[in-house]
Image (cartoon, rainbow, N blue to C red; front, top):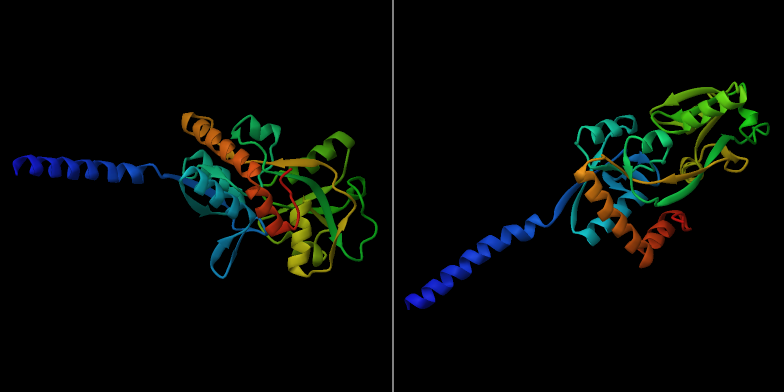
Length: 254
């Protein structure tokens, strides 16, 4: 009787030890996003959704992460990353030399182009050159302001750049700016969603690659490597393509 009592006691002890360790394997990963960049990340009926949300849910499922989404204004997301309050940003972050010098980046998960958008009745703007002397709206904290500033510097340009926290499409539709610049995919979806009298002007003038930034430390390197492995698997098994086609009707991931 004592023998079996000891066996049961040992078994109970092992269960008590192993149960918490099983839960501990589910790593918490905090992903920052604005929740206001349709269709990548947005809120509808009090629910956070979008392309980036679905991709991270798929990564979490594959890597056994407990993914927690943290929403904040786009201009404040890198501050949250630097202070460790989030582990990465998923908000169509473009890889730039300045950002690469400061952060680790995952492999790209979206390939896109920079696009000019104007009012429907504007037939004078088709390229960057046509923006000289014009007022152009961009999202605050985005890399698009840097692209326009570089053009001004390299070509003695006279583009007037104005930044806005949100609503660049409304600014242009109301005539407060001549055009806005953002990625082609978001621009097209924004026109479709807003029903404002806007149109794409000309072709995309620069390729951009979107990826997830991580802090350059041991934790960041480990997480970046895990995410890259998951991203490769999602490409291979068709999940990434499926999510893309759900939101865009085409594969934007290659």
